[in-house]
Image (tube, rainbow, N blue to C red; front, top):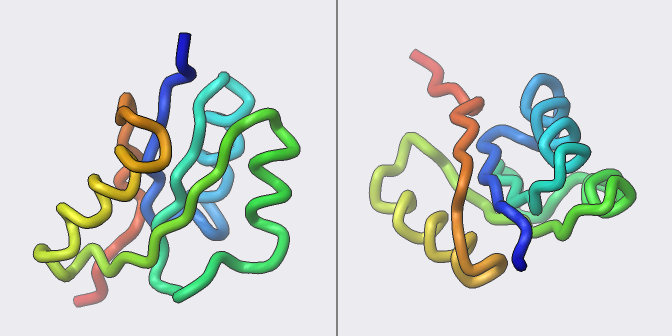
Length: 92
């Protein structure tokens, strides 16, 4: 049986990272989506160290055209999406 999978937007630090860690502890595989081209140092190790599989996708949630690419990345990585944490914000 495959593990449930979650996408956490803005998951590289702060509240998003705490959500990603909690979901990893609860048995989810985690795809972190953030603005940076590559994940911050240690992010993958933090998630994998909690027993989860890890994937990363660069994504600007303000760009609606990129949303489908984010979903596709999660499906490619884990074959499913069970949870979405909409943590990333858009500046006004």
